[in-house]
Length: 281
Ligand code: R5P
Image (cartoon, rainbow, N blue to C red; front, side, top):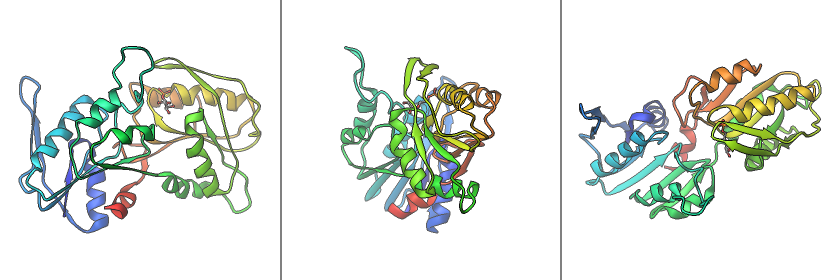
C-alpha cells in the first residue's frame, strides 16, 4: 500500500503513513507558465491511497490528476479530508448548480472517504462507495484537557442547527452541556444570530462548527455569549478554511484560541485525524 500525498494534504498524508508504518509515495507537481498544473506520481504501488483536500479549484484539479496518475494500481482509495463546495449541496435558487454533486460525480475510485462532510447527502453522488468519518471523538479527546474532573465547563455551543450533532457528540464525550444558536446567513461573509438566553455565566465555552470560513459565524456567536456572561470563549472546528482575515476577526472579537483538525494544513490544526484515516484504511 502506498500513501499518495496531494499538494494540499502533505502533512496529513505523512502522519497517516507514519501511523500505518507504510510507504509515503513521492509526488511531483508544479504550475506551467500559463497556470496549468503538472502532476506525477512515479511509483503508485498496487493499492494507492490518495489523500488530498480540495479547498481550492486547483486542489480539485490536482485530485483528478492524482487519480489519473494512479490508474495502474489495482485499488484506489481516495481520502478527501475537506471536500470543498460541500455547502452547495442543493439548489437553493432555481437554476443553480448543485456544485457538490457536480464535483462528486467527477471522482472515480474504489472507495472514497470524507471527514465530517458538510452534509452527508453529498455522499450519494459519488460513484464509489463513500464513507464519512467522524472527527468528533478526536476533538473531544483534545478538549478533555480543558476540563477538570468535576467541572461542568466548557459548555459546547453549536452556532447553528447544522452543528448540533457535532456539538452533542463532543459534549457527550466530555460529559458537559451543549446548546445551539439559530443563524441566518445574509451573505457570504455576514450572518445574524438570534438572541437566546444561555446558561454560560462564569463558564468557559467552546463554539464548535464544522467549518470556520470567514469567521463571521464565530464572531457573532461570541457576542451573544459575552452578553450571557461567558468566561473564556474558544473556537473549534473540523475544517479551518480561515478565508481572508478570518483569524484576525476571531481574535479581535476576544476569542482565546482556535483549535481545529488537520483536514486542512493550518497553524491552528492541532488535532490530528491521521489515526481515524489509518483505522479505516
Ligand atoms: C455553514 O453552514 C457552516 O456550517 C459554517 O457555519 C460556515 O461555513 C461558517 O462560515 P463563516 O466562518 O464564514 O461564518
